[in-house]
Image (tube, rainbow, N blue to C red; front, side, top):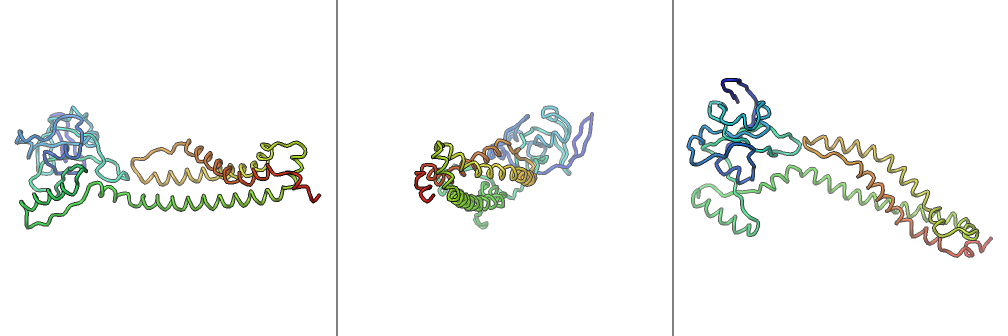
Length: 284
C-alpha cells in the first residue's frame, strides 16, 4: 500500500477487504469520518478507498486529515473517501489490524442480514432467489454467529470442563469438611459438656468448633490466590484484548468458601452445641 500527497509519502502493510455499497450497513459498521461508497458516484467503484482507524493511525494522520488524499493499493490508484470505526474482524486473540476496503467486480461470498422471527422462511426465500439467478451453483450457507462461535470452541470446552471439575472439587471438599467437623465434634463431646456446665453459651460453642475450620479455609485461600492470579494472567495473555482481574473477585471467592464451609459444618456443630451436657458427662 502506498499513500502520498505533496507533503509526505508512506508505505505500510494493510489488509485488503473487497466489498460493495451495502457492506457497512449490513454489518452495522459505523463511520468515524467521510462517507460510504455511493452508487451515484461512479468513480467509487474503482477509485474509492475506505480505511479503518487502525490503518489511519499507522499512516500517522487523523481521521479528518486523511480524507480525499491519494491512495494506491497494488496497481489501483484512487482516493480515500471514508474512515470506519475499528471492529474485530478476527478472534480477540489477534489485535485489530489496519484494513482497506474497496469495491471489486468479483466476490467470493454474499452476506445477507435477516431477522430471527421466521428464519426458515427467510432462508427458503433466499434459496429461491439464488436458484433463479444461479441454478447451476448449489445454494450453501452458514451463519456469521456460528463462525465467530467456532473461534472460541476451545475456551467453551475449557469452561465446561472447569465447571464440572470445580463442582466435583467443591463437593469433595464439603464432604471432607463434614467428616472433619464430625470427627472433631465427637472427640470433644465431653469438653463441650463441661464448657456448657461452666456457663458457655451456644454461640461460644459454635465459635469454638468452627474456628479451626475457618482458619484452614482462610489459609487455603491465601495459598491459592497467587496461583490463581498467575494462571489467569497466563491464560488472558493469549488474547490481544482482555479484562484485568479484579482483586474483589478473590475476596468474593474467599467469602463464598467461608460461607459454604460454615453451612457444611453447621449441622454437626449446632447439634453438639445444643446437646444436653448430662448425656456427655453421664459416664464420668
